[in-house]
Image (cartoon, rainbow, N blue to C red; front, side, top):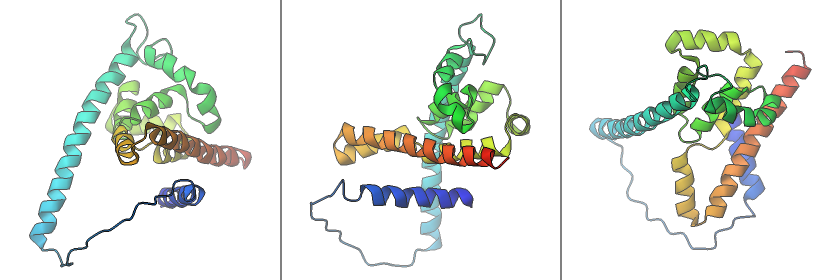
Length: 207
């Protein structure tokens, strides 16, 4: 429930901060059709179409993402899997200075990087990085992270860029790569600030 509140709060904050920066002077006309109560068949068909679309999209992204994570965490061949000597480890180390203040280590950073493509990949990336899945992965994460780190990680995952598809949609709607780039930068900054305030405040309070 707390994550829902944070999500809505960030939406309102963003709207208030930028409502005067990006004004649309184009007239907007929307023709509304007569509203009718949907039938059970319509609800089932629409629901099934949305679920099928999500599963197809998610499965494609997850498969590709997990393969990339595996490759980055196992090369060079002479490096121990998922170690700092792998390509993924080196990439994660680059972000450690920025992410350490919010309780996110290099391995979690790799999962977040791939989550930029689609957030459904985050769990799959963690499974590949740690070589575990299901309950085993859940128990490892519970041992590896305390609740403050876990909450900080979830806050960052919640707020930062939703997925690559969203960025493409923003670019197409705004007809500007600059606007899309600013959206990415703002979401990353806001995610970091919220996680930083939460993590450092919790540590200061002794948690």
